Image: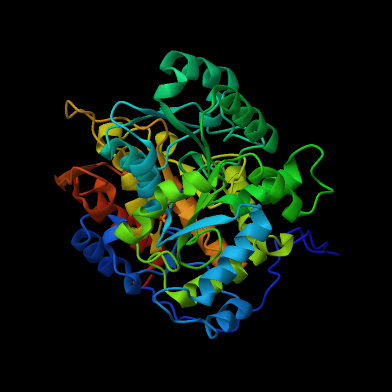
Length: 482
Ligand code: F0G
């Protein structure tokens, strides 16, 4: 979507695709939503999709597929071993990244499991710009720990910094020296840094960080799950990159890293994952883990149909018309909310729009999960399903105390090519209403709290009757049917 210019109309993002298949949506009345929210234990992961109008939980595995992706699925080569579908994907990955060795896996966290199992020993440190929930869980599972060195400006909610995902280079070098290089399993750079608002990392920063690691002989790993957004931002925001084709930028990035892994539920617009390994010996050192955890080396737990779709999806991720759709819709949503005064992460990143629950619900203590409560409020008042990305998504400290997140965010993901601008306007409208009625929202507490990744399956309840009062106020404005 390279900016279409308008004659009389204000500038708005434009879809560079048309709809060919649709799924009917269901908008339950507010009273029923209150019941569903209670049944789901005030956890939006536990809601049924049929009870949701705008599913903005994630962009993982729910992006719209293109006709070309669907067509490719028909030629899938079913074989336990030696499927041509896999070799097509491998050739495409080699063409785009210049890395010949590929370990397939069923999704991103499976790649993280393999990398943690292979590289992390008890007491080892993994350095990152910022953690992702599953990456960290796998590292701590095998006895390692994570050092997050994103620049401190990256954690400021309001900013006009173009690359808030950049790692602090001085802190990186100091950390390597403090830990000693032998104790650092690898550097993990997460493109499109998820938990701080889908914020990109600049090419210059990736280059400098990987140069430092090379000096100390430390393995460098890129989490490319959100690389398509990051490529878009490098092209439009980074000095000297405007004239370079996306493919060239992609290759420049790839050349910096020893290992690249991805969730193709995001990067590739289908459902799967892969680890690319530059060095043959390193590849062989992980090879046996794929048949053990995933499946044979030519499918890795993926359906061969999905492998075919990913191969086309990867190619489409090199097309500015396609990869600009998400960031431009997000930017529109963020700008309108920001103008209204709703605290949002600025500048808009990839992945989704992020509401700052710390500021919006400043009256709710962090121990009562303000981002979780705001996420529930948006379902109650609009049937919009977002995702909590704050303290609830953290694990407790070893002594049982809460590890308070550095940001309390509600993520409204924009799965690519799924929602229209009018649906985006609906979301903006309901967020404004919730913001104007924020004083009615209270906190949450656990009824059942799992020890690991508690946000997925935890059951919570409201700390008072605030959900009932909020729904009453909503019905007074919109009537009982909405
Ligand atoms: N890395 C990043 C940056 C991610 O955003 C995700 C998933 C993963 C790794 C794990 O990949 O889900 O295929 O196992 N993010 C999803 C989300 C879950 O909703 O943000 P996965």
